[in-house]
Amino acid sequence: MAPLKVMVGVKRVIDFAVKVRVAPGGLGVQSEGVKHSLNPFCEIALEQGVRMKEGGEASEVIAVSVGPPQNQDALRSALALGADRAVLLRSGPGAPVGPREASLALGALVRKLQPDLVLLGKQAIDDDCNQTGQLLAAILDWPQGTFISQLRVAGEEVEVEREVDGGLERLRLRLPAVLTTDLRLNEPRYATLPNIMKAKKKPLEVLEMSEVGVPPHPPPA
Image 1 (tube, one colour):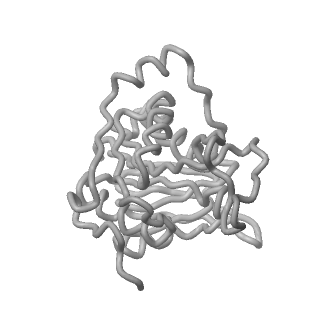
Image 2 (tube, rainbow, N blue to C red):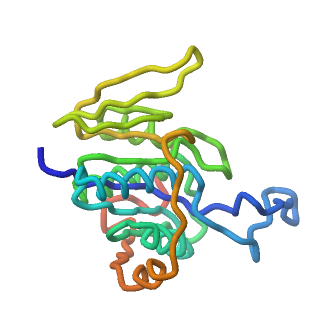
């Protein structure tokens, strides 16, 4: 089988080292003026995609994100870590981007970009929902492997090892598929200064929800 086109979802979150404070009014956390970075589990997913590209298993790694314009910072970080190009699907002003909204938007991007494999972090450290990968697989009707700690491409299939309560489970999934990554899959690299500079010249496309057929404010389920 030809090398795979890999799409990696990334999320911009408050940096894990920041002490989170309650926002005025008590209905959320203080995010203004606070350092943000790539979600650590998304870094693991991205690292796996880049390693696949370096090993000849992937032809292209596309980093994608759903949310406000500030998410371009996370995508530039992804480009510095090895993604070939990036796409931001911009949400409407004040529009919530929870697992349901993110999975609907990512599903639209999958239909546009036509990847062979989607890699996501198993959860984001801001909400800890652990739902987007599963919802996306259901929307696409694709096989899914969650919490994977090992991955091997085998022709038109992927073999994964995932961590479950009773130990380890091994699955063989036919491509295309959705995978969510666990901590023990790999150790992400650091972005070097030359790669940070190169990232500024890599393509970053910004799309509106309407351009991929997703309403800015999805109706209630």
